[in-house]
Length: 355
Picture 1 (cartoon, rainbow, N blue to C red):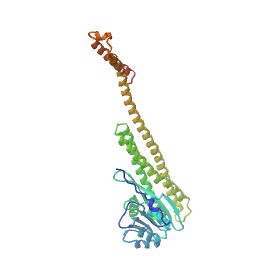
Picture 2: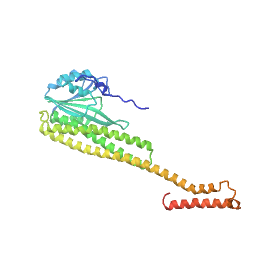
Picture 3: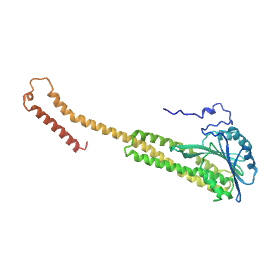
């Protein structure tokens, strides 16, 4: 049974610009808000009970990371956006989960959209949108539901590892984007292993129908990963060239490191894309070779029986004046001749390496 596809585009038809319409599939009953408020000597980790509790962090002297899960809670998302003076079009992009990765610069904040990739329990690539808002002393992250790749950043904050507690909100944004891009390497490594396993299966005679489906699934995975990762080069390039006061010059060096990682990942994706096309060609060649083998066997069998059918046809004709019919051992002689022809043709085909 064909799976019915849902369209998020229909939700935007006739929509007023800036109107919030959630287009994702993951829904939570309650908005979950986690915060890290910290400086070099102090950190407070807290789960907020309401949206209003997040408003006080806008004016604190410390750095605050506010992580928001549950984009289907439109009213709460809208309240947060109004308090932090986010443009209506930015709020629309946050809840539009089909948004292409991008960066928008405003006077008091930067807005970045990325795709967070991971494998689910069925080994399928899942793409989840995550939005970042960088302010003077805060970073807002918006996710569809619980579960992300930021546990490493959280542990560094709790344990005061590295530079993250001693630097500003721009470095926190870098650390979060770096966590997303680092997880791309896991996706690429798993995808490479899948391609190598599939290549081995092509030579072990595994079910051809199964191989064909796996190739198609891998091709879709590569395209999904490519759409998520390639725009990130443009985003990092824009950040490096920005003249915004929100990102300090010393932090730009760290963003260049992300750019190098994205280039490496992009090159691997191009290689895997070519390998998958090569697997498809190899698969078609294997199918063609098997068909040729079948046709060769059938042709050899037909060729062997042509002279035998010719002999049987002659002596099966209804003529009275066929001299060999009166010969006492003619039947046995005819069998000997046919067997000799059969064996002789087999030896000839063997010698020619047609068998």
